Image (cartoon, rainbow, N blue to C red; front, side):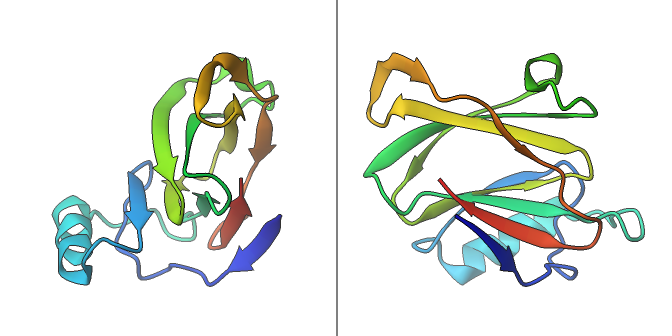
Length: 129
């Protein structure tokens, strides 16, 4: 499911900074994290994509980012374990590709096919895994 989220134009998160956000994170800790990593983004280029887990106890997610819509050719950003109610927010003007465990909780079953999106400049989108 894809939902349009409120723009995070004043988020203070720099381009290509990746932050796993959880509801359980105290606001003070989150503000400290954002303040410590803040650098001004290029004007009009702040684009956010939040990958949210609402279904499983936990799910592994793999993200790549780059200019290509052929996801395997883009550099890997990383792999994270996202627990239920958590998000992984990716900040980038480039194509963002992601995939999750084919069977959440069972790493032996491999990955789903790649999903991808390029978020329009100055906007934020949320994808429910």
